[in-house]
Image (cartoon, rainbow, N blue to C red):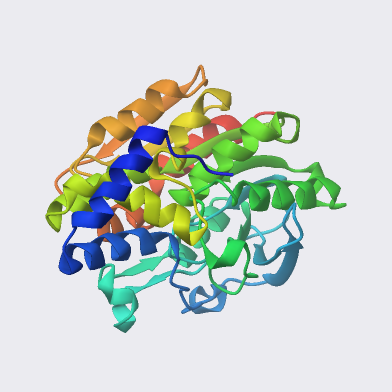
Length: 325
C-alpha cells in the first residue's frame, strides 16, 4: 500500500481546509492525469503496406489481457526482436491528437508508432508491440488507474515470459524500446525479475520521467504549486501512488544492459532536465548514452516522434548490440 509521510499528510489535510474551490478543482484535475484516456488504434501496419503481421493477446503477469501485434522483419526471416511499449495515454499505434478532443487536450498532434515499426522491420528487426493495461484495447485493471510503472511492470514481465516460452521468439536476440511510463515499468520489471531480462541485449529508453517533475511543472502553470502534498493525498484517495513513488529513479540502478536514453532538453511538461539526467546517472549500465533533443519544448510532437523522423540513431544503436553472435 502506498504511504505518505505523516508531516506531508498533515500538511495536505490543512491545505484541504483552506484551499479555494477553484484551486481544489485544479488539484483534482492534476491527480486525474493517472486515470489514462484510452487512445484509439488509429492506424495499423497495413497503412504502411507491412506484410505478415498478426494480432496477439498476451496475459500480463497478473492475468490482465494485453492486446498486441507481432510484425515480422521485411525481406525474410530475422533472429532479432524488438519489444516495443508506449507512454501514457497512448497505445501501440501511437497517439491520435490530430483527431481532436479529447486527445487534442494533451497535444493536437499525431504520434505515429507504426512508422517506427516500419523503420525497424525495414532494418531487419521483428517487432512485438502491445497496449499496456488501461490503454488502447488491453484489459482494465487497478481501478482504471496508472501507476506510471508501479503496476505496469507486470505487463513487461508477462510479455517477456510470452517471448521466452514461444517456440520461435524464444530463439531470437531481444532488444527493448521502452518509453515514458512504459520505460518506468520496464525498469521496475528488470528490478523485480532480473533473471527474465539477463539475456536482453540493449534498451532504447525515450522520455522516461518522474511524476513529481510533471506535477511541479503543471501545478506551476496553474498557480497551485504550493499544493503538492494535496495532490499526493488526492492520488491516494483515488487508489493510486504518491508522486515520489512514480519515478524511474527507484529502479534505474537495476538496469545493467546498454541503454540509449532520449529526452527533450527544454521539455515543457517537466521544465526540469535534471530529472532525466538523474535517471541517466542512476542507471547501472556500463554502456549508456543520453541524447538531448534540442530546439523544441514539445514532448509529444518532437519527443515521441523523434524515432519516426530520425531512425538512424536508434537503428545504429540496436545494430551495435544485436547484430553480433
